[in-house]
Length: 130
Image (cartoon, rainbow, N blue to C red; front, top):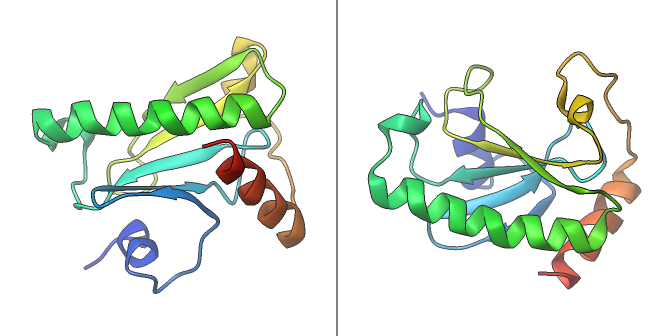
């Protein structure tokens, strides 16, 4: 059965897409730790990051680097944190989170609430900075 992310990739579920190429997609997390929290997902469905080929592993980081650079230009932060968990959705994905201190990446933190309009505006700002 297709994962939630595969359904997003296939256009069956909407997302706030910030970047895409033939192998990867990046979209805003709808339950973000920080404003700009973005997920980078390979289009090929693998349930665990280390089950991907070496090529996909290297390319996802290069793709994520471009997204992170745009996030840094868009969101005031010290840097972009990177987290890989892989338990919540059985489809490889990387979390890119604008941070100013290590504690900004704690999963126990209160999540940020954004309106649909705020998400759409953020997408446009990130895309401008790509």
